[in-house]
Length: 383
Image 1 (cartoon, rainbow, N blue to C red):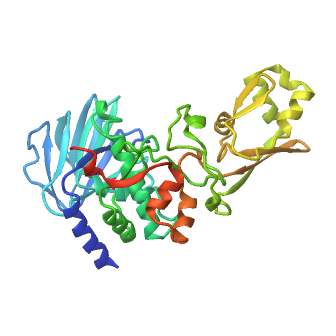
Image 2: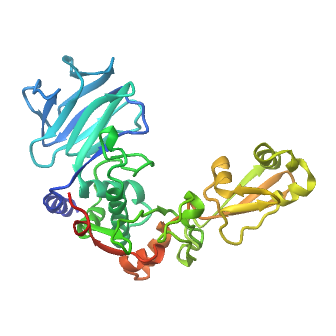
Image 3: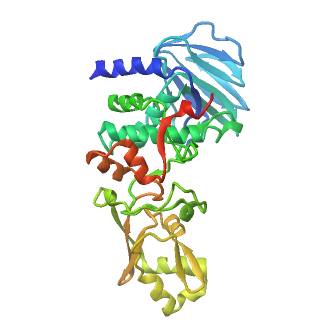
């Protein structure tokens, strides 16, 4: 297996040469201090565009970066290298790999290619410059590894992730990078180490999903639709032709198909009273909110003159989805729900079942997204 991984990596490195993107790292953490450890390859270090560190960093060496009065304090062991506005770690050999370790991070994260450190908003800003396909493999491993071991499903996720990335390349451009590594963009926890995911990414090299006008689509996806996907208009108040609700029998019965949550009756009623007014203290209104059947997905729960958004209830009570029914027993409210996530676009568990039943990638994308096709991004984008 080790030799298979090494072979794929060698081919992969050749194939991905060209398009590089910049990813903000450790977005969810306050970064005041971080250790940069060189794992393999060789790194040239530029401090404010000058080679202050005359000897390139090799495997096994490390430096510590600390935020200090809008500067970066750089130390190498006990040696103080200096204070700088920007520090670049540029890989100069094959297979350049480094890791980041900070006290807030449960375990170190391993990354490929280059790193840029600067300061922003009174903390360190770390940006990984990496080839697109290596990044996509890392995203797929971060987002779905463990939910399936099927190469064909990894291909679906790679195409969806690549499409999303290219469609949102300018999301953080004004901040000096393309995307962040958090859920705001794409979960990205570093270098991909799984051979099947590397293979899936390589075999779908440059594949993206476009609409009827050859425009990259928003490849929204979620864990499980609960048997029916949601339209973008109902979730994001924007009607998108290819993101319409579809009946999804492929998601029924999967791990995240059903859920239940118990909420104290008083807490449930208090939400409606605080949000929609004191009339919900009245028995006739309470009867409506204590017993409610959602036979199919609805975005708006209409009670008299009130329009109650089910997504707001989901957010307030931290529910798995907005697709739920309500029953009351004694002093508790029971929410019996279906699905996991916002419900828009592709259901990952549904796609896994479709793959097992022999559906092709094109068929799966066309099922969850209306009137789309797969093409090479080089056919529609000029870099």
